[in-house]
Image 1 (spheres, one colour):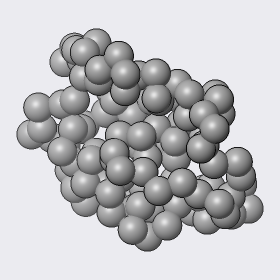
Image 2 (tube, one colour; image 1 turned 135 degrees about the horizontal axis):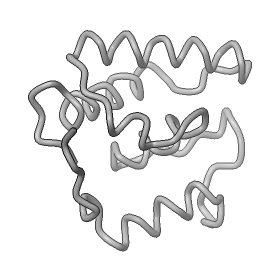
Image 3 (cartoon, rainbow, N blue to C red; image 1 turned 90 degrees about the horizontal axis):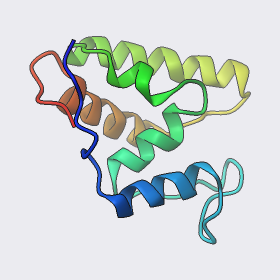
Length: 111
């Protein structure tokens, strides 16, 4: 298993991620459908994917593009059934898959 660097994000990015998760930012989104547009794919990833499971579960996994597309599609369907809403949009789907392929793809360098 490959060890991830603890410095894949800056301290400022870490604070932003935590404030998003804890909903302490003034400009943070309350509830769906008033979703915030993320300029950083990592923040989108954390916001959407950690609603159901930890980020470590994802970061310890390596998959091909096709496998990530299937996984993210399955998770989107799961969210529709359990959360009773479309948890992320089709444009966000592509951003999340691209990030996962770049960082968690079979031949990627990681975060």
